[in-house]
Length: 122
Image 1: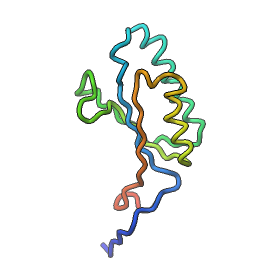
Image 2 (image 1 turned 120 degrees about the vertical axis):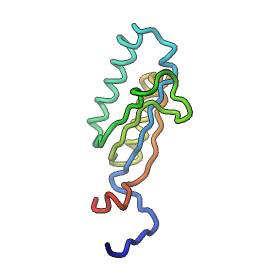
Image 3 (image 1 turned 90 degrees about the vertical axis):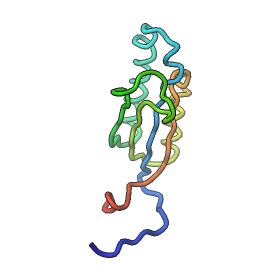
Image 4 (image 1 turned 180 degrees about the horizontal axis):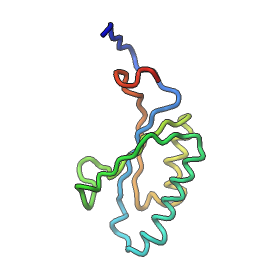
């Protein structure tokens, strides 16, 4: 293995964005609200994100060994995206406010970069 250089992080293009998704008001709703209102609206928003130039890299749902509120990690699921620009990230988080989904879910975006030792060729 040759010399490994580790300089200042560079902002990637596209942006590498880690989104955490927490169920908040979800637990105060009825099964009928979940199935007829909330889940269809959430699905519509997530499908619309496919049209904004973002690339979904992966998802992770913690529900196999958890139930109820998110606890100390403060999220139930996460999404990893490559997103073209900061305005698109903002538009994605705003879509929860715009549709009222922020009453049931909390969405937070963090911007990072690919880990240089594993993805240095991208």
